[in-house]
Amino acid sequence: MKDQTVFELIHTMEKVTNRLIIQWNQSFNENLGISHVLLLSQLKNNGKSRPIDLAKSLGIAPPSVTHLTEKLMKKDLIIRVADDNDKRISYMEITEKGISILNKAQGEGYLLQKKTFEKLSEEERSQMLNVYHKLNQILD
Image 1 (tube, rainbow, N blue to C red):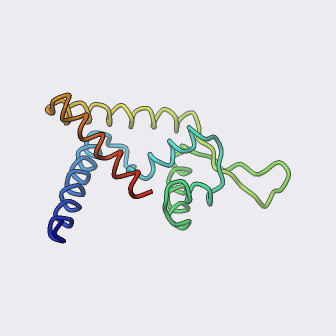
Image 2: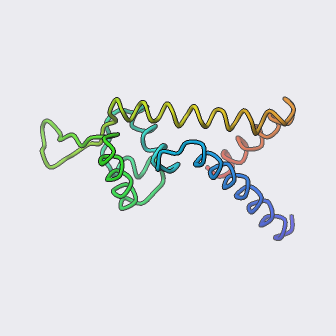
């Protein structure tokens, strides 16, 4: 495989992803980005978590988690909870309002996904999913 082809592949995948993110942001309209929604989803799925654990699971730097959680706390979408045994340790926990916003974000994502991918045949969607699964396995 030529280097140009590798870069073209990466660029094309990024271009599709960026366009999907832009369209999702326009429809969601809550002044939150994908990273905020991913953090909310992580908290909903895994329960209260330490910021360092959120950083590791999301693959982002701890200062980025701090920035994301500050905005989510200002919007009352998450709260900080102290550890019962060690007050030096704090956790982030999603609120009911956070769950509601997460559900809205996921709903908008589903509509965008449906609108975008329904133009592909069932076979094309299956092939695309298989390729992305295989790439994830290779990169792990």
